[in-house]
Image (cartoon, rainbow over all chains, first blue to last red; front, side, top):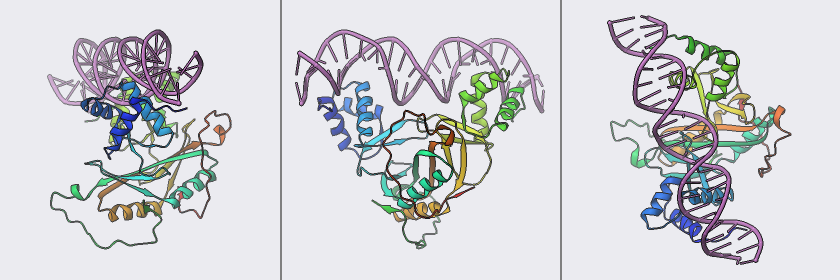
Length: 148
Length: 148
DNA sequence: ATATGTGCAAATGCTTTGCAACGCC
DNA sequence: GGCGTTGCAAAGCATTTGCACATAT
């Protein structure tokens, strides 16, 4: 039902050489720069298809633009994204999932879905100024969230 | 610096009679229905201004549309929102907060911030939706999240 | 008076769609 | 050969902006 076209292959190939989140347009431009000739609409259609089939990770930026990248993990997970460079760490938060579903059900909500994204500054972009970070060992409770 | 115009007053008044998240367009229509004559651009401009000054709560829906409503609580909290009618329940998830900050620190991220929004169908809109999205079964543990 | 706010229409920017041509399977 | 795919341009949408006019303070 899903065919292998030159275009789809090129899109996947482009994505595979890239591990930060990128918009459809950025991906399209990148491909054009690489000499690929693929229509913008095709890029959109494929990103959508691939995302729906779970092969891509989608992230909606604050302004509503959709960002994609290759999946590292096909299951449900969240992202810790650097506001400066887009560097991304995936993580799981199983307790969160059940917690959300529980609270939703308590209120009679069904077909529940949620979005959780964490933004911050990674090691390379944290404090280029008088950074007085209280870098003391963090309280560890058990981990309810685990890096992938 | 901020003036009291008939339009701004009307917008605030409309919002005050309403406690679910609504889009700029919905708010505009509502006002029109109420006999108010305010330009759509004015609604957009004011919602933006008010949100920036902290008088309104903003929420970005999955498709990138911005939803607004009057603030109920100025502290940090999350929302359980009905995809159909915008009906909203606020809740706290204290464990989530510490969990997120812990995982962020583990990866050397600082200045961490996060967004968590839960979307679903409330009791009035669960049945008739033709939306056949594959839903994974959930197991529930204790709740670490509490309704506000 | 004058900085702000407003209305309208045109402009943006991202994304989707109609449709004829194309090319996997 | 049939049906998913593609390309292009046009259409959609939510939102923004340019500009002349109106108005709070």
